[in-house]
Image (cartoon, rainbow over all chains, first blue to last red; front, top):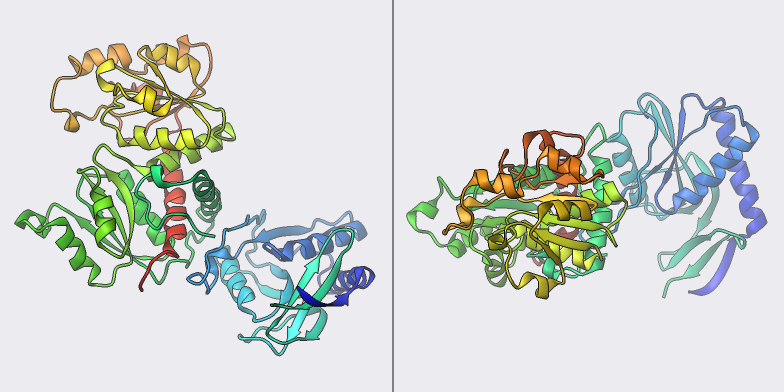
Length: 176
Length: 310
């Protein structure tokens, strides 16, 4: 890891996550027909934060929150085999609004796979995409976020990593 | 992440990490099988031939379903009704099939070592679905998956393997696997059906009294008496076998604890297992069959990345 550049420090990350949560509340309150789904593995800390925060603001509301693993739907399966994580969707997504949540949007291929995986579980009335960091101008598929924490410009040799815990932050570094 | 072997020829060649990886992956596939659409696109670029030189119900259907749930293309080959009866050799048959661009071969054969022979001569990935009296690795994996599901793990668990140990590839694969995963094993049955070397070779307990074995274990895997592989008289009659070594309701009740009963199928009802045991709540035989599809999906998925040419 070289040339670390902090995109969001701990405070900014908190603010951004809270803003995303409020945007979701604005569009989805009272959440009866909404499902929040974190994409395994790295979207889950984001979706954990957002759903916990929404729940703390509206403790009386039932929040549908699940996790989706996309390993079996990847299009790069012949390059590298991944070990699957848990898919846990404890509700029906049929005719509901689904918000897919992930940490970094880059080529869009993960989201393509996530939509395929999602549709195998039913037919949602609408699917939205909530992203913490959007790496602009690097998409390989026509996919665009509906909620975006921070949009950044980066080049192909760089990587974005989100750290959680006490020293939570988002950094950009050169992959060597 | 990949397995340490290119083929699945036997549990013997797998590491405990491989076994763990297969079982963990199978857990996720079991979830896939509960969905409204029980299918994932992972193997849509792969063609698999199911090469069955020996009869099979469960294994063949289970493999075929696993392949279809993974979106692979499948061809079924059974020796009866093929050019095998005209005298075509195994290698010729397989090479002809492979020239039609097949990536993986799932194979059952009555000769021990047949898949190992093929693995040396052809480029495709081989999955052993049972070879003679050698191994039946996917059965052992699904047995382990079922044990793990029921008992919460394998390490330190007591498993009794009861019946025709000598002719059973299921027994051998199970012993390899359970030993690698740290379970304790007792094999039980008539002395004529338990090989003499077993105790020294594998460090398993040998018990000739089925009741003692049942009282010792947490879960019992009861095996079929394989009459088709016995060319000499090893016990006097099926009726006598049932009286001395068969699992009956009275026998199970007499041990004073609840254990689970497994059987790889097909059951000889009234020989190694009585109907009122096979159909009872203690029996997890049908769960084993259900788990078989998920475990075979995991094996095919994890081996699919290993093929050399498309």
